[in-house]
Image (cartoon, rainbow, N blue to C red):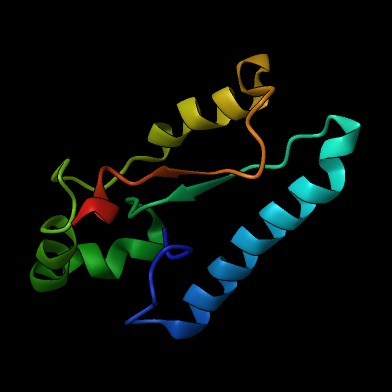
Length: 108
């Protein structure tokens, strides 16, 4: 998700996500001729140990939820469908793409 945002709270983190988006596109261009698809998943805010402090603080938790139309933190299981799709023959012509799985965060 931060591949698409400026990184207001964490510029270094955002920069690394932009770099991963660039690698995805560069490797797509390089490896596509060998019928190798290079894609990525851009997850939104998920309920993990890393986000525990943010979720535990009512103010920051609400700030995040206010930006998610789904009005909830993602569960890691929410990523499974995207991963299965990108690993399956159904995505054979999908290349150089970042699949955003963020509950709609980027639309707000």
